[in-house]
Length: 222
Image 1: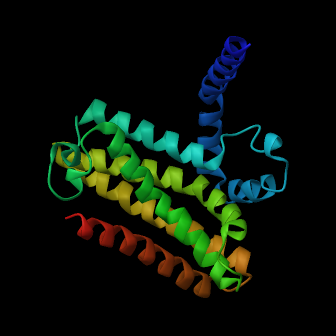
Image 2 (image 1 turned 180 degrees about the vertical axis):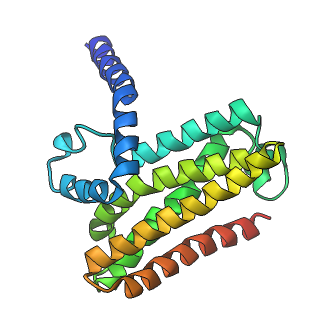
């Protein structure tokens, strides 16, 4: 009986993994072309039963994870092993292979959805616990993934030799920051029902807090 249960589990796993080939591009396209609608979609899905959630897309955290795996694969195929993996000091001492490097990148880019979600919950005057934090965290993952992909792409271009590639990398990085920052302003303005100036303050504070957490973490292990 256990053997047949194992076969059934493997069957479901294989189907789920192969379905990613369809739903990852669909999710990425929607997140790039309709990011705010995707965030609203995620909020709406949180009200459904668990088995009925995200049936036509990838779940937001999985989408972010797969995006970082793909971006790392692109980096390996174009510029080779990251200097962080090769280095053995500071954070490099914690990153001794590609798996731990991907986990570190997941932790870094997940800080943005987490801090943005926490900032929204606190701005609403609600208690910061798991229940009110989950929905905004999930919706933020839908825009954090394209942001991570653009930042990773910029990093790859900056490591290439031609000057044009470096300039393109800086342009892509600037666009990624502008795209992500603009979405945060619109998102805070929508959910807090406030002006875009006040929303910009919330978004800027959250961005600074996320970067500060990562810097502190880096200094601890430097």
